[in-house]
Amino acid sequence: MAASIRLLPGTPSAHDPARATTLGVMGGGQLGRMFVHAAQQLGYRTVVLEAEADSPAAQAAHHQVRTAYLDPAGLAELVRECDAVTTEFENVPADALRELADHRPVAPAAAAVAVCQDRVAEKAHFAASGVPCAPYAVIDSETALAAVSDTLLPGILKTARLGYDGKGQVRVADRAALEAAWTDLQGVTCVLEQRLSLADELSVIVARGAAGEVVHLPVQHNLHRDGILAVTQVPAPGLDAAQVEQAVASAERIAASLDYVGVLCVEFFLLTDGSLVANEMAPRPHNSGHYSIDACDVSQFDLQVRCMTGLPLVAPRLHSPAVMLNLLGDLWFDAEGRERSPDWAAVLALPGVHLHLYGKAQARRGRKMGHLTLTGATPEAARDAALKAGALLGLEAF
Image (cartoon, rainbow, N blue to C red; front, side, top):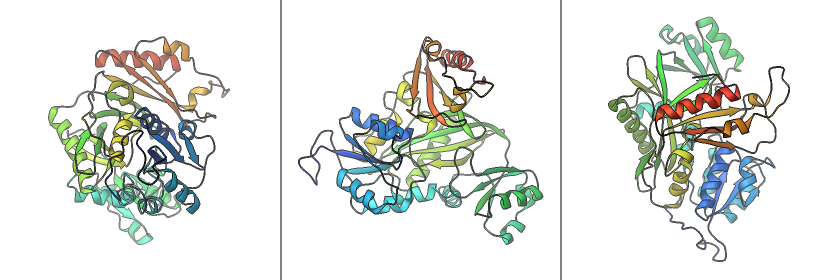
């Protein structure tokens, strides 16, 4: 951050006494929308910088700056409108955040976001933090490709930049497949990770303030399908106390060594031998933490607001076990590919249902259109409700 601040709701801003405190967010997606909701609940004005006219976040914000992320005029307008800025998307250019930080507090900082944007830098940071990750090699040339050890195969080839939700990732069984995949990816810098024997996928969301104070959400159990998160369960089933402690401590150590301010999600693989390795991290609230809106007394978006405004960080309490189901655009099409509307009435008739739709005008297969959180008195009750809701929507059981 450029400066440590405390911005109380409704108070005049430091640079314009006639205007109430305003928080800005770079990016107009659903994460920005939920951030805007959390900020407005505390009385803040909100501004979204996003080129798209009818984005989920822009629909909810008080004002939109409709420009590209690096547009000088747009950044200047955001500075005029806002007292502090955050990001909802890890691929917002770090240079834009650096420019904003010359004039306003920005959380997370550009340097931390830049590490999360590059898998090579990310893995180096895991190592520097003393957190293990999968064995890997950096492939940035024909020479590096030829030098890859056979011990890393079979593996997963991932582009170093701009990969998310399974994009820019190719499973490779042998050297021939590796060479073909790197060619298909246009020879960009990639990371080849050894394919490990996985038992489960987990994530930890931490929130760290400017003074180094840190809190975390419960450890989350995740199920991905086709590289996209499908199901999150909290509390994470089957973990012992030592594994929970290790995951939380590792995420906090990663955040501290970045001098991070804001909400950070670290995804982990739990291996079949019981050990944990870091997979990747996101410098923002995360899909796996959406349940916290309905199942915790402080959500990940509340924490995002508190981090960027200097308000106190309090440890979230899970008041209800929960299961979160991602709702992809596939649900808006029948088996013949004809458009339809999901049967929300049937789903909403179930107990403990919390439906969140993101306001996206067009459904597309694989596009995140919303999520469903099912809460219950016990983990078993939440899971049972989630299975019933999934069956009504035609989702695969878990």
